[in-house]
Length: 308
Image 1: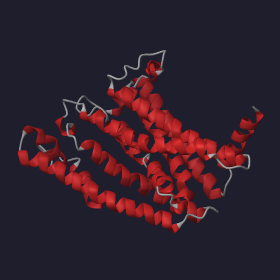
Image 2: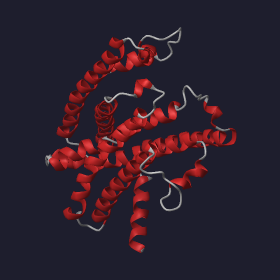
Image 3: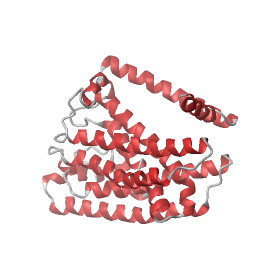
Image 4: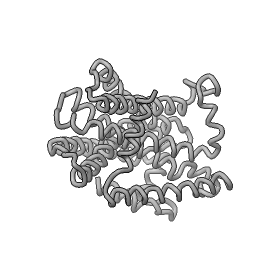
């Protein structure tokens, strides 16, 4: 029992050891965390009314960030596939950074969903054998399973690897390689199920499209590697860890291909919505051109398309 406790103590010591710049960054993040705690306390006190969400805009920033972070979690698999499926040595050197990013992103996903629930005290309904998960009928229950599973898989991989190194050894391939391949398929499932959450909303015709899931995956395979490239450059310049240039260039090539696919899917979606001229095109018209004098989101949409 003492060895695992010592292992955790060493991890915490390293996490809070670094330059003044690093410790200042940690302190800055902690201040943001305190602001979030205060805001969440106000929500618990006054209810979700403080978010200004309505029946028409029922999800807001909570689910928007949840969706984005699910895509960010895909960074892990975009490193794992080249490293283990194609045995790319430069990618093997950064694979654990991608896995840690995936863990952080999934944790943030779960926190955003918890904030969106409004009543976190009811979360015990999700606990197997205690509450009623309503699986497999509820799409949300599928999302809980895939997110929790992806978190467990990546936590096992990283913890096992670090624990083995802590004892001066190497991870045993027969223990972690099967889990690595499971994580590849699981990473695809988390974004697919998230897309299905949108698909099943019959009252929102804009989301009732079979292309939503593949477009989510295409955009995820851009966002995840993009964030990872930025993180790797910061690590390379501010730490003793040397990031292989071949790995960063490989991620850039993946992004370049997936960006083109993402834009192609976007064009297919817009053509389908606009060419028919049906009432279901109202959402696309509102996003791209504005509708009945409302143009708030138009600059954001065109900025996103232009940057892509």
